[in-house]
Length: 391
Image (cartoon, rainbow, N blue to C red; front, top):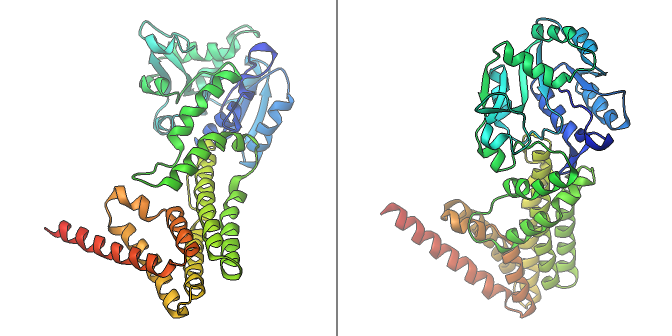
């Protein structure tokens, strides 16, 4: 159960957006993931910003309530219930908290010397409340003894502490890395987005220039695209369209231009894949691999092999030589990606580099020698690596 309350400046802190999703929706996702059956929002009435919460809650099979004070909240709870309380403006980006609340009831706390400057409330000499707690429902009945205009969140915290609900410490690192902030303004949330983006961008081990280019594009435009509120799965279709366009252009007009489109297809695939992962991270969802993402990898390789065969034939070579060279080239690169050291796997998998090299070769009529040179160099390199590993 999550209870966001009215924020400063006449609005809702819960409505502040972070990476395309409001704080309230992120709190709601945490509550639903923990199995909460009722979601209670503390507000004057059902404001427009709360309607998406209600729809999301009901779609997940939970009940949604808006209460104005402590008495209605007491009436909603049974003694056997477990109450999850999340403070207004709390941005829950630390995944380990889910595991903590899955196993224990308690009051999350931070060291006072770092928690209090970050805006969290002091609970004792050494600790500040980290903005989240889980407590038995039977304790909530004490709210009925308090004035109707009392601070519900603060009162629940004090009831939990007085009832010896155990404290669960969070490390300082969650604050230093912006993984558990208390947000009061949109500008504060925007300032936290770059570090969140860096943590969730796909990491490229080794040298892969076109994967790095896609990462730069993601860091520049990723959050802006997430803010649009559209599902990013459609972006995954761009790469196959470019690959098929490159195939059509390479077979019917110019192999060099066809290869250049495969370069764009690879960049688009890396960008869309990273954006898909950012959206999954934004929703605290597991990152799977969509079918289209898996298919487009093989589709791009097939298009490169087909364009290579056409380019060899256009260069006054035999079609069968081109077919062999294209298939052997792609097969070898896929094999090398399984046996090379980690620093070289990224380069062997970078189809942007391959497409650019083949585009230059096709433009100069040297596609077959270049393909053969890459194949021979790859075979020799693979043999040497395997020999060194066996020594």
